[in-house]
Length: 171
Ligand code: NI
Image 1 (cartoon, rainbow, N blue to C red):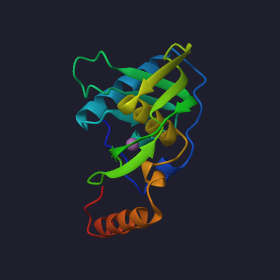
Image 2: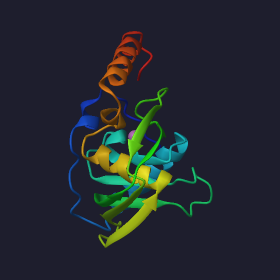
Image 3: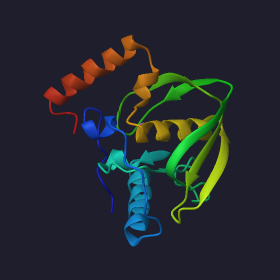
Image 4: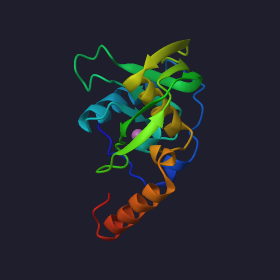
């Protein structure tokens, strides 16, 4: 099932999501399947459950943008355990459509997470993948990438979004 993507302004995006305690359930597998489907439909490389209105610590990533599926990753209850270096490039978010901003982030990142069966694993990613680990983990902590851009730019985006909401162009 393809869910509509929740947009910036909805409080579900700005509160920490709930830890997952039950694994390998039909419900969890269905959620993961729906998240991939919704992410591919929206042409994203990552999606966190709060972005479909479900406040649980589940994120999916596919940096091949729906290529062959070999890059499919599921992160449940993820935590960033190591960060190294620095990279700066444009970042966007399906919940903030139409905007992209330069964000400086660590270049090499290790995430510790659980899979759908509840097994804990660690994975290290660089560049785009490191950025995805950080961006999605932020989402599960109630943080948008906008919290990493300057106050000036953030306020500008906020004003533009407010105008679009008024004009009925943001839903
Ligand atoms: Ni995002």
